[in-house]
Image (tube, rainbow, N blue to C red; front, side, top):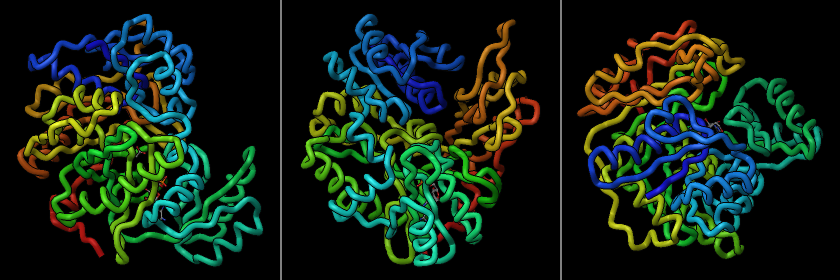
Length: 429
Ligand code: AMP
Ligand code: GLY
């Protein structure tokens, strides 16, 4: 199959890597294309230059290539309606319409849909001015949770005990065009990401994963796009996936269909397992990064079959998904200064060395090529080192051995990805 993947991150590299594995194992022979892609993706797919936010240009590229499936990775093109343009050209596309992607693009819209569908989530106030903001902060009390209403690459949320900091963040969100800010009840308990593949009607959950959003060990420091992930979650209640399917994902997909804006693609359900039960923290309209790197590493069913079935609206016919029994740990290597800033242009070496370790592969995100063709850093999150192991301890050991073999001046990474889970220290209140 000719497949075009849109995006530039490690998530897109993970998708292309999984599709390429079908070629390597001989179960399929795909012709892989990506736009804009990155130097890692270029190892297994042909890259094309395109503005990923320009639906007409993406659809034209897909037509020119004769693509039989287009996969849109990131949220910004989805919210901009890129999947609609490709679908209008008659090409199967994996990813929701712009209307349906509002589940991620607007936190207040997501809250409205959750309320209509009876989905358990944090209580919230949508504020449009500072006096409403102050009233909402005082109504919920500390810890304060203040969220920009629009897309903010995981950085629009502040969780703090400091009322002044909460107020300052909220006021900054309000000062944007059409500024709206969502103030929420604080949710205690561990977080889980569950990706639900949808075709507008049917929902197929993948395996749950956990993400590490804060930049520092022990969840210290500011939020990032995500510094690491692992799966499986040995500590999670056994009925979790069924509960989320029946109380969250299916009611949401049904509500979106009822509204005439069916949701297809990945409904990313971000959950908190709180003392008062399972609550939705957020919806995203795409695969999560870096959880996808670990989740897809364990998927034994050919990924192309899953994506195509969703794009064609025939997920109900898909055989139950098969999973590898191993555990997977992903560690993100970030450039100096991330997330506040990101140093770029530094040489990266040691990737092949890392990949010579059993069960380890390295996915590119913020990488580029220098004028002399040398691999250099070109963004905040630079690489994802992904390891499969017999259990979390084994996968962790391999992932960190891989990280140790990579050299990038000034880079940093968390050293505690999956550590508490390995030690059995994650508890549900
Ligand atoms: P979001 O962009 O909504 O996913 O929020 C980013 C991160 O902020 C989440 O992964 C949580 O760690 C934290 N967060 C968001 N909402 C809440 C909440 N209501 N209570 C506690 N933490 C939250
Ligand atoms: N892992 C967080 C996200 O993709 O938004």
